[in-house]
Length: 447
Image 1 (cartoon, one colour):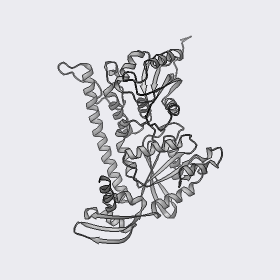
Image 2: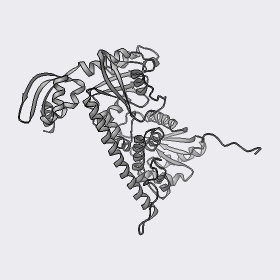
Image 3: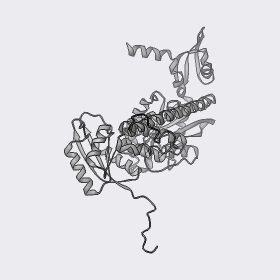
Image 4: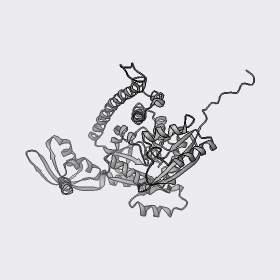
């Protein structure tokens, strides 16, 4: 029909106003301004256009609105001035903050926090069944305490991967409100998702057991989001893992076999990048995936050496590793993207900050021979002294010590084998539960 305006092929990007607060005494890895810069990158990844920002320094969060009432009025005026559709807070809002702010801003403005934004990005990038289950679980666990009558429609939209099983509205019991029905349905769906993910976890456990029997060591690539882990995996394995210059471009885990010097091999596993203020719901939901890291024999910590906050990013990664119980695993640090440095002398400065690290460019494949040599030494040549009591039911570990370790003294008792010797650094984590000196250290710490 003549004169008809064609419909847009893409939905227009929503306009977002950022809100950051610096709480007195709160220990953050990034400054408020640096954290807002990162939030802007997250917003862009999620398909939002940032039109402005407001900040405030507080002794403590306002119990009703997180920021002060005067700042709320200022934000409201800025949204009217800029035509913003969304107000995005840099920290996770509690359910009361969310409700009060929605009342004040009204229906024309959506209120989101950093956690909700990251969950949305994860939902966009989950390309496997496992990833979709993990994200949907995290979404529902985030949504449940925030559910109000105004939010009930969101309960049916969250995740998008439910396939209609459990997320829809069921039959009401006597005297039940619609809100109670929705809450009950969400709890049922959460239970179902946890059950499905437990099956995934068991399946992954069987795969890991087979890998251990194969004697091929597993190296887990860890790092801050957008540090270049997937690019490095492609360079090491000549594979084609998806790579993009955006946060959380790779969500689902990928494992590739890599040939090392001396005829050795290793399996390299790449998984989700870390970030400061990583939502606890995501850490819990991705337990099955993150166990891939906790069960590795070596961590390859990839750092973007060009980032102005590389030290804070490294600390955020180390904190997350501690949270998932992987901080005891041997680690090799890689300084990536050296080709983007304005002056290669800056590499020496970075090496002072991260001694023992290997400088590389995964994109240009610079420094790869040095990296492969360092990996081989860590996995196969560097030995660590251990003293262990291995019960006979751990026969596989006893055999592994004979095959790949250096036994200095062994005694067979009624319960098992007492061994003093040395094992490759990559195997230390396997023997840690049986180490005698580790048990002594624990007793000394408790006393």
